[in-house]
Amino acid sequence: MFSKTKESSTSPEPVTSTSSPEPKRSTGNSGVPSIISADLKITGNLKSDGDIQIDGAVEGDIDSATLTVGEGAHVKGHISCDSVRICGTIDGAVKAKSVVMAKSARVIGDIIHDSLAIEAGAFIEGNIKRLEGASRPSSVSSASKVSSAPASSGGSAAAAKPLAS
Image (tube, one colour):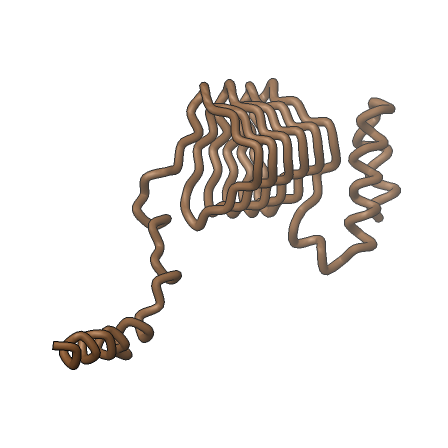
């Protein structure tokens, strides 16, 4: 009898249990977003390989494939995603390949993007930089100076041409 228990204790060591790594499971490709509802407040960082929809409040950094910030949502932290749709408020930097700002969007922080769409009525307080400009830092810094100076002086076309050339 004891030999059977010893055999059964040695048999749970098969190579099959170690050959199939469990961390490679991906639930992010299911097409269903993780939802932070309007009555939920999260303090801490969020990381997902899938989609996240925020209707509540998050204090922390967010890293995901796709992020949707709902109208009543408030995010305080940095965002790094492939695609972001902003309808609510973000206090922090946004870095994404594609950024869409609805008319109800409010961003206080820098936006670094590859593609940017802004509806009339959206509010931005910060710098807007293009991702592809990372290989040309001198042109990016002059472009950010051009975009911020005309906004305060009111003359955008006349002030932008001499600095960009």
